[in-house]
Length: 234
Image 1: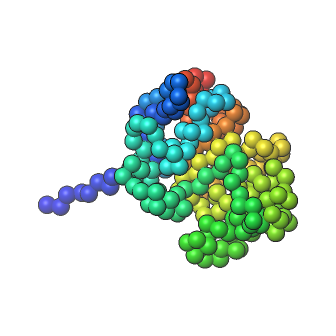
Image 2 (image 1 turned 180 degrees about the horizontal axis):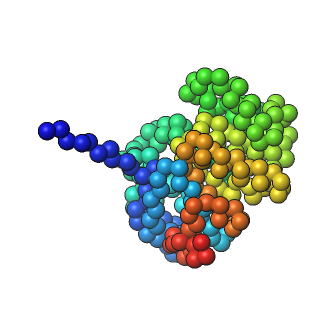
Image 3 (image 1 turned 30 degrees about the vertical axis):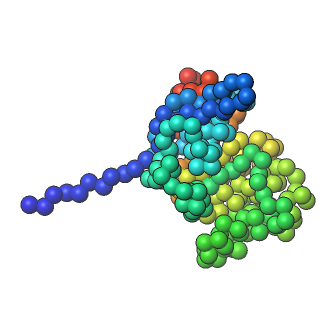
């Protein structure tokens, strides 16, 4: 008699009792305390909280850019504690998108080259065409050959967003992705991120101070006093 095989579906992201402490000469500061989270494919979640509450730190821990003081992070079925830096970097490069608050564009590369970089690293077909398309989607096709220093802050942010979604990542972390944009452009970028979520089943983890933006996500969480809890008004 044949038995049915049940496919085990792992969460795309799972946090177990994540804590993060910073030690100074005089004291130990608890930034995060026992944070827990489990996200499935295509889920959207917004994390809100006051400035300095640890939101960006939490996002970096989720993506494996920062190591927690305690707890376990599972990203795309991999326990990050068991991986070395090269293995973590490979997972991020192939399946993770990250939009940083401070853009992190390479100053010696044009807007197009910054977007091309992750595609060329893994020899993606039609890389240049895809990079131009990503630039066009954020309204910067005419700025393709400009260096970051020749772009405004808002334009640099749009390049960073195009770079994050050009490889259609499995999970996208966005740290205040519209914080430097005017209202019209911010609305366009918000729509783009949710389109990516719908079209490619991309899981979206968003840090934002904009509650109207946050409420478009399926789940809103609040980071307060180092604890991650459901937003009381969601």
